[in-house]
Amino acid sequence: MDTNSKLSNNAAVILVSHGSTLPYAEEVFVEIKEKFIKKTGFATEIGYMKVSEPTIAGAVEILKDEVDDLDKIIALPVFLAPGIHTNIDIPQLLGLEPLEVDPRCPDGNYPPEHYLSIADDVDFDGEIELLGSIGPRDKLLDIIDKRINEALAESKLDDDAKTGILLVTHGSRLNYNKEFATALYNKFEKTCDVPSSFGFMELCGPSIPESINKLVDENGLERLVVVPVFIAPGMHTTHDIPHILGFLDEHEHSHSHSHSHGHDHSHDLTPVEFDGEILYPEPIKADDILIDILVDMVNEKL
Image (tube, rainbow, N blue to C red):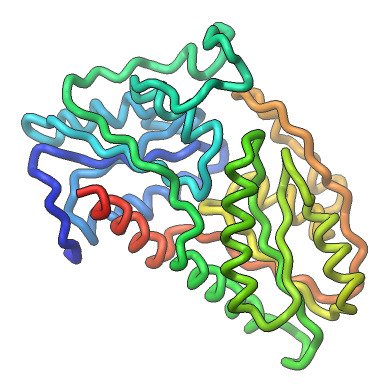
């Protein structure tokens, strides 16, 4: 165990995740939880917003059974950037007040079928402390550099091939995600010695195709490393982005995610036109550096 934390024996941690219909996303979070417990010794459970189990309310029940006289829960959103989920959905799913008005439903009266309407209430009399999202921490740059090096190790081109880097993240209706991506990229750009840029999957710009086309056109690239700044693999990282990069044809892509669980998303899925080599490493997943970041976040509040 490697922690200087002073978390009491009557406290526990919920690692809050979005949830996914894809099993390997859940597998990643199980690994994150196991590594986090091994590093800290804290009673810890995953709580999913929707789709997956256990729910946030279900995670509270599990921890109540595990920890005698549980009187405090630290809820740690394993989200890179703030947004509607961290500022509005997760607080309400924990029984707390949202941090701001919901632009999707300003009066707070959600439709009966909305996931906030059908979610179980949290049954807990103790203190729940909700932490913020991960944010543009310097340690994320170490993970990004690791993924870039892993990708370049698989390249079929010479070391001196003209190379560019594109960081890709999700996008949000709120401006926070763009602020996160901009701040992270500004840090990355200072350490990067090749042409680079960033793009968003949806909801704000520049889009991935826009950023790639601009980066390629302005720099005469022969090789492009597209780094998905996502924690777990999901439909965006396994289908949408590969489709844009030309790795999937229309039949393989099929765009099967309808977002029937509450999203109304539009995507620019136009494949890019680039004759060079595109390298596409894995997302962050349960990287040991991410575990260090999560431990840091808890310890900063104790």
